[in-house]
Length: 80
Image 1: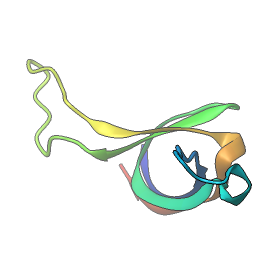
Image 2: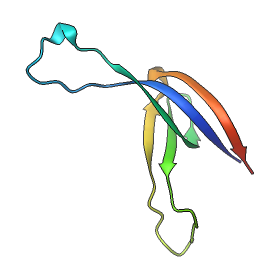
Image 3: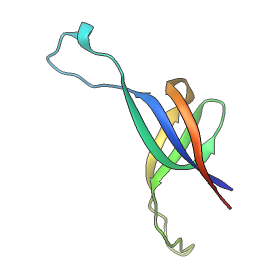
């Protein structure tokens, strides 16, 4: 059973030529299929092939997020 989730999380920020006192992590959001969860992190896929052919190598895109950086995670839908 795969869950479709919406996650709000803190993201790291790279900066150059700025006053470091003005920089802080930013809040971002993502929606995707939760394919892994343990006590430390989650993996969410937000782009995948519509038809999954086991003979082909699957190409997916997503995020691995530390749970300590997650502000909120809501289940949107559950797939059978």
